[in-house]
Image 1: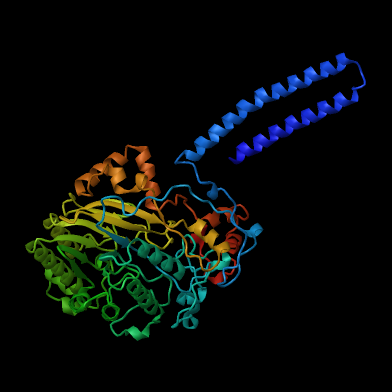
Image 2 (image 1 turned 90 degrees about the vertical axis):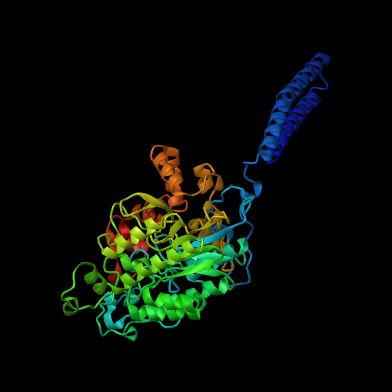
Amino acid sequence: FFRFAVLFFSALRQCLCLCTMNRTMYEEIEGGDSSSRDGLSQSSTKWTVGVALVAVPVLLFVLLSSSTDLQSPNHPSTSALRPPPPAVSTGVGSPSPAASERPVVRITADPPEQFPPPGERNFFFHIADSHVDPFFEPHQTMGPGMCHSCRLSRAVFGGGTFCPMTLPVTEDQGINQGYAFGRYRCNPPTRLQTSLFRQMKSMDPSPRFLVHTGDIAPHGYPDDKYDLTPSTKLNDLCMSKPMIFRHYVGRLRQAFPNTIIAFTMGNNDHFPKNTYWQPFMTWAGDMLRAEGILNSDQHATFVQHGSHYVDVDKLRLLCLDLTLFVPGGETTFVTEKELEGLKGRARQHQLYPVRHRLVKFVREALEDAKNKGMSVYFVGHQPLATKKGKDEMDIDDIHYQEFKAILGRYQDIIRVAMFGHRNYAGLQPILDSVERPIIPSITIPGVSPRGLNNPSFSVMFYDPAEYTIVDFEQWIFILGDENAKARYKGDSYLGTWRQHRRDLFSWSAVSGGRPFTVGVLVQYLTNTSSDMANFFRYQTWKRGGYVGDEAPENYICKSMYDEGDSMMRCLFKDQDPRCWSSAWLA
């Protein structure tokens, strides 16, 4: 309509100018002979008719094309093309910047799709790797994933390390610096978790159950690499990270007070990280029971091996602490004297008693579920598959081999395995001890954008009769766009999560509507390797729509500097030079 109006009035103006010019010339020669006036009259008539013959078809064409465009379902709304409204104070915190200072915000025209989709009423949320950092500082770092003060580094400051035991009372870290919801390759501030819970509750305010596959705690806090000894006590370590862990577990329970939460420990939830240490696990079990995540029976098994199960009707969610199977994952202080005379299995059981208890628990839990006619969802943190061609698990350990054999024995009741950890999405079958695919698994990128991913969570749809996963879709948070919006919308803005195009990125779209079974998954992965369109779609899905191999700031700073020190000053202007990390310069 706007284009039509502009062209219409332009043509009308030309016609009026011509008529005025001709009238003036006519009056100037009014005293002349009649032949001159008649000639001018004929000329004026020809000009007017000519303009009309050209202008009318053009105007009709523009009118029709504008009307067609506006009726097209793929045409972006005109509101999406208008500049943002004038700055108005939000009444909360700082006023919005002037319009001339506002950043350019990319607004997608994808229309929202109905949720839940027609006919799909049985679903649950799967979240992972939130890693919320209450001390987030976007212009300081201890390395990728750790964007907070360098004073938290025990390696640099030793006894002078900052060990906070109270939390900031605000969620405004980074908002005035353009990082209200976090920064790529960094653990996010609390505001992103608030936004996540708000979005999930808008979709289902009180879900029956949800799955969290671990890593609630952030990276880079004191004593996360503490050298443990048999005499070490928990209070010998700085308790900042356990305090933060508890705080965000409490926020999860507060957001969903009536929901069954199937939670498993991530490697970074452990303290020190990547290791099962019994004094901390006893503390963690007591904390999870106090916060309402575990009941008494679940607590009793958790403090034995970090694992438990949750029953929902005829479904069992088996939540396993897979950090135990990582090399060095079980802290053991068994002496050689205690191992004297022991060989083979007996020696391994004595050396790794917690792994031994876990394997026994898994066998008994699966046998019990089978006898009761239940289906099982396997909930873990680390995927049971290679990472870039390397094994994360201690695959030669006798307990891990027994564990894989048990999964093969009960594959008929295990419908799906769900993981996090890697900060990007993945679809892989779990293999048994002789490398046959037995269980379909899905790994999700997680809430934290530390892996060069857009924050995301998944919605899993299931068949209530057999609990087979029939579909899943990704909900994403376009971090760059949302940070830019927050700068001029003010600190009351909590961001917008978007459905990652169901027609392109949901399981039903890529599988042709077939259920998520191991056979269908293997066929999909085989076909994807030879179909470049599907391959590109899979790569886009892996990081929640983020397809860069570096953080956006890297490209900006590389255009200005080529020396490491200068680059680091560009990337983190408030950084202590003692903590500069070359890992950012990739």
